[in-house]
Image (cartoon, rainbow, N blue to C red):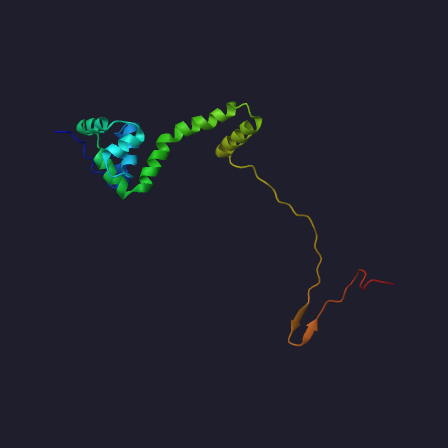
Length: 158
């Protein structure tokens, strides 16, 4: 009879994180694939392992069924776990861009990494244009208009 480590934590997210932490990368890949198929052998084929490998994992006590049950309950926790687990791999790929032969790609990667660490540089938006406008207000039938004080339409003309 297979031995399974049953975990009873405080929340579904905590439980899922603990269960997934007991699985290998291929076992996690299987569980994710299995949630989208109706049979173990279909999911095994999707990730490139044999159905007998999956049976062996279960027999050896890998909490695969428990992980699938928890994933169904909390898809967000699953996604966050997978993101954290693959962060180092993604970062290694991003860093490899710094070694590219394409200057433009290297600049873009360097800027992105700098902005992650230091934040975006402050970009000022200064507008020093002065705007002059005449304001006309009306109450009922009375129009009140300011008398121009300078310029081509009147005012300070001598």
